[in-house]
Structures are given as C-alpha cells and as structure tokens.
Length: 456
Image (cartoon, rainbow, N blue to C red; front, side):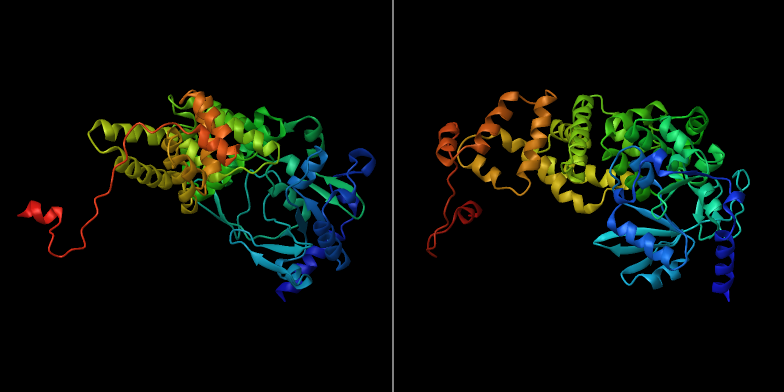
C-alpha cells in the first residue's frame, strides 16, 4: 500500500503539465552539451529508468562541469523512483546511506549514484518542514530520508549551479533557479536563506570556498555574508567528515587559493584544525606554500598526488620543532626522533582524523631525510632500495627549494639515482670515520666473554 501511495504521488508530479512548473528549458542550441558528452554508464542508467516509466536526469556537478568545459569526475542521477524500485531495475546495484538512502549502480565498470527526489521542505527554506527529519540544537540535519517532487528536490540542493537537470533523451537542461545564468556570470549563489542552509550543513561553508577556488568563480555577497558568524558551527561536524571535505579542497588543483580564502574568511584559529596546520607555521610557511603549489600542479596535470606525502609535508616542521626541543633537553637524537614522530601523529590524529593507513608512508618519508646527507659507502645504494624512496626524494627536493637544506644535495642525488652502477661508484665520497668492528663472541666454553669478565 505504501508503494502504491508513493507511486501515485510521483506519477501525479510527472503528469503535471510543463506550463504549471516554474522552470526554464534550455535547449541544446543554447548550451551545446550533447548526450555524447556524458558517460556510457550514466546514459544507460537514465535510459533504463525512463524506459521503465520514471523521470531520470543527470544532475549536480556533472552538468555544471560540462557547461564550464570541464570533464566530470563522476555522474549523479536523480529520479522519482524509490531506492527499492531502482534496485529492482539494476542487477549490479546496492542501496547505501543512512542520512539519505542512495543507490550505487555499476554500469560499464562505472559507479553511477542514483538518488530519489528529496522533499518536505518549504520553497523559501525559511521554515523547513522537518516532519520525518532530525536536526540538532544548531539546526544541522542529522537524518533526512524524505522523498518528494522534482521541484522540492531542486530547493534541497546547495547552490544554483548544482541544481541543473540534464535530460539525455531531449538534450534539454531544466533550470528552476537561474543556475545557467550564474554559470555564465561566474557566480556562486546558495539556494534559499544562506544562514538556514549553512546551519543545516556547516560543511557547505567549506564547499562554497572549494567550488569558488576550483571553478574560478566568485561567491556572491548574499551567500558570503553569514560565513564568518557561522564558522564556529564547524566544531559540531564529525572530524572524519571535515577531513574528507578538506581533502577535496587540498586535491582540487586549487589548494593554495582555497586555503588562503578560508583564512581570509576567519576559519582558522581552532575552527578548522587542518587550516591551522597549513597556515600557522612561521618557520615552515614557505615550505608549505611550495608543497600546496606542487600538489596543485600535479593535480592539474593529472599526475598522482599522495595523501601521505601531503600530510608528511604539512606536519614536517612540527616534527622538527618537537624533535629539536627533545634533543636540547638532552635526549638521544635517534630515539627522540622516533618518539617525536609517534607523538605528532597521535596528537594530530585526534584533531584531523588522519587514517592510520598513511602512517607508514609518512614515517618513512620523515625517517629517510637524514639519510640523504650520507653519500659514502653502501648507504646511498641501500637508500635507493627503500619502498618510499621516490616520495622521500621529492620531499627532499621541496626542502631544498624552500632553503631548508643545501641545493647541492638535491643535485647530487638527481645525478646519482639516474646513473649506472659504475658512475654511482665514482660519485661516492670517501668515508672519513673508521667502521666499527663487531666483537665476535667466542664459541669456546672455557673462554669467558666480556660481560663475564666485567661482572667478576
């Protein structure tokens, strides 16, 4: 009975004459986005849903990126089919999500996310109808499995440029909120009341800054106005979610611009711990700037960028400062360094939610830095064989560029790593300190060892 009721609601929305819907249908002649521009998987999913009698559109960031001439990383589909109905249509699919249930469909080795139109919110969003939704004391949505119509779904999205619906069948873009004009004007506008929307999900503050930096557009004054006052709400967001959102910014290809914009808007000094790590390092400011610029260049050139490498760089000067304090206090250098690595990672994990799987790479990069100074004997050869040598080498190059160590070290290793064995042997420096000879313990039972002699 519930299924019949939901189907009756959805079908009545689908049957509503277009003239009664307040949207603009943008034709292919205006936007020039062909169905051939979208992926095979998303095209097949929309066609299957439409052939089954449901409405189905490509939505969100994919439509936005196509209009801006960018290649979408993934595709999202919005439909009036319930998750269960979608699941029955696709054998290779599964329902996921708690706050709002979605369906992941595997099509042509591509994961396409399919969501049901969301609803139960007033169109001006000043007084949300939260029957069936849960919020905390600050207005943040905690649980939100509420289905609705296409028009209601539009009003539930975050920014106008993310609220465009592309129909591959007609090659039309359905625009309810002038998102198409905002894209042409390079403007980022939030949907509804800015304060209410940021309270519902404070992560939208970070998303606004990230999208503006990534797309090269400006946040409009109405959207930006409450950001400073509402920034403390970020403290209520789970650390793991903040970590994921900050990773999106750091690997957007515009990390440096995004981080600086966040600081300008006052989101550091404890509100966003990762931003404090990035920006509040007087001794390592130049090094961090070079790291973020290097990461941006790699992302823009479609080269791999590592989370472990980035956090090794972001935390490096904190490691140096703590280690130097321990050695000045009289602790042995090597044990103090290993203890410092463990302490820094433990402290930052509580604030930044850094996954433990990155610890191995981070510690390896840090530990190998001192070994680049050794250029005699077999040590350089053993360093080349280390699993994370390339990452540690790139890290060392950044240290040279920042002026932390001599450029001559980078030049020597650049030549050494690419040379043949004979050339490498000729590059080795002469060992100045004599090798320590291990004392062999006698196998004769009648000859006491050194410890026995001392004890006697």
